[in-house]
Image (cartoon, rainbow, N blue to C red; front, side):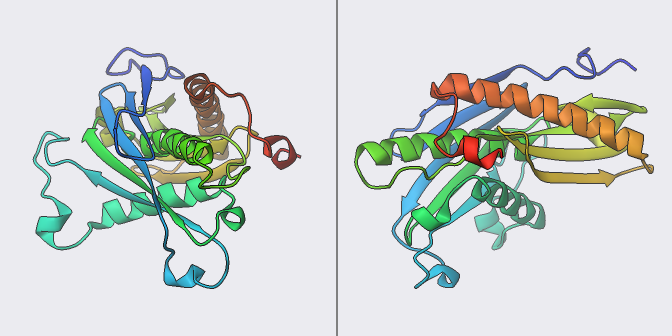
Length: 250
């Protein structure tokens, strides 16, 4: 098969991460993967949800939204509709769940990090871009707050990134654009830490069943994609590891 943008099956779109594009957020990042653009911002709040009150533990959560003209057809704002759409709710739960896996809530105190992910332009892979960019925003926020002595050390255990994979016309491919995602027989999201541990494998047969051999090929592609994204995160952040990353990999 020939991909719509003529990439090789294991080739990602061009990725660019701009650190701290926002003035007021504790940490922020603009991630661009091909035509997909997501603005991520990390905010510290001195409160926790009810289930954390009195535990001494903090919380990390995410909010996700697509701007009205981020896609070919205008998307009504959630505030106008009066509720968060099911897709947005599912995606923001995914982002929060994945980022919590590398964040030490026990050392954070009863406070909350909110990771806002706003899709400026969508061409496939917005949820995985939100995870990858959201992590950069989180690290930058922790760095700034550490400098101001507002948070303790060793809050982040390891790097984490996410990417999409799928089967299109019988071929396993990495980093699906929208047209590929729309016609994929199998669609999958992979989130992985710098130590090589999987946090999320979210796969669905959209049009046809898939075999264990195909599943293994998808996971291998996703792993390779996550490693490339993590290497880019390291370059952007100027660090190669976190204090606890070595211990977490054992």
